Length: 491
Picture 1 (cartoon, one colour):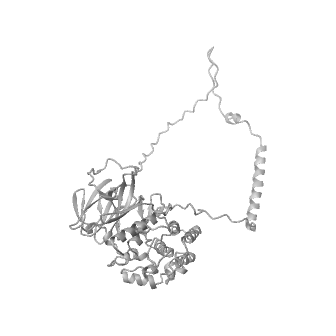
Picture 2: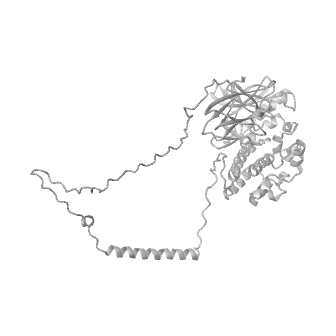
Picture 3: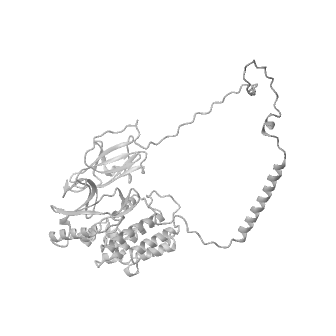
């Protein structure tokens, strides 16, 4: 449960090139993220050459200093495991957002792309080309800020790694540039092509090269024009479509030339007010560099219509002032006279000698009929959603089975999108069936919990590593059902 001096606390996620763990640095007493890669899965030389290349790329990545780049703290090798220690970003990846259909608005998408471009620009100035820009490597913190991770990792483990996989699931290759697919030399413009693919996906909710096999994908990246159908871009302005075309140009010389230009043009498009009218659940990106209002226009001559309205207002003001002066000339009795003029005097009894004189107080009139108080209806109290876990409901109190690899959140239930689908699902020690029975689609049901609280689910299958996940049910959760999305590791 250690790599070097770093303690492994649990698994955050995994991909084609390795596993990312949540870790702890006991020397500096801080949480870290640890990416581990098995050296025997890396091609391109002997083990010594692979380790040397990995450490060299980690040193280059550590030189990138930018708030939009995940900081690299350390790197090493232990018993065939290459590992890179990085800043731990509390949040989730853009890939997770898009996978559940949580797409940004136009303005948010352009601002997100601008932030990523700025981070890539800092790396390019340091001489580092990312080579694997994809939603999984774009992290969104709880404050909405964007951070790009895994600089230099693609080059360290071999750029062709993503193209050697078989099957129908296409991951990183879907974001590769034409020159990268051909195995040619790549520069900063290759990263910007990949960022253009991501921006296209965020704006249109589909990939520009929607292939299901690797062979078809490669053909589309090299030959297909994703802008051939003009009807597909009805919601986008011509300027935004032209920008996307430059980003995805097959020839690098025709693309946006550098990351600084990319960020500036993306923000200029966002500033023009090309914003969707619908609300978005996507976390708002900080728009510190984007003006929220339009710039003030220079003073111009007033139109005649506006002048006419102004004169009418002045005339109305003069008439109103005259009426006020006329009313002011009428004599008005003092307030006391007005109040007491029609009042009937009440005879006062003589006061005894020595009794101090006090002003007479008029008695309240006695009503001839006693008023009947009409009771108001008792208001029905509105439900109050507490900011903390509510009490009084059946809340489980299990002993958490360490380590919990991930925590999911929902208001009422959970669905289990587990790979393999025949993995057994147990909740609080009770088997509820296989994951395919509870995936919420294709006949699968949604598991509904008895009330708010934290529940622990065990995912297991023969020949695979058993894991525990936590499911927090709270009325304050964003999603109706927690989406337990996990891939069991083969033993």
